[in-house]
Length: 42
Image (cartoon, rainbow, N blue to C red; front, side, top):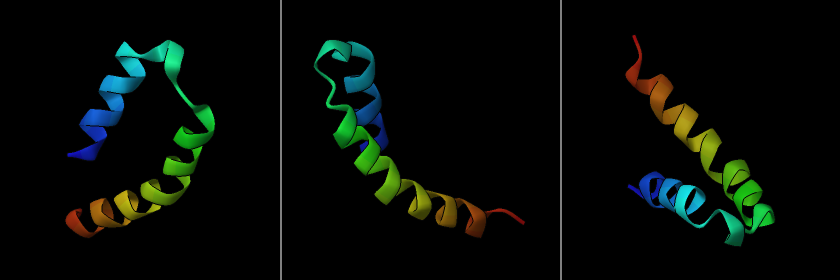
């Protein structure tokens, strides 16, 4: 799962994080994640 890789980088490589890239991923991936989760909820 991609989110595991992102989490590991955020936790273990904090000094090397490109926050613009993180924000870009949030903007493009989170809406899709929310949609997928809503489909699984009753």
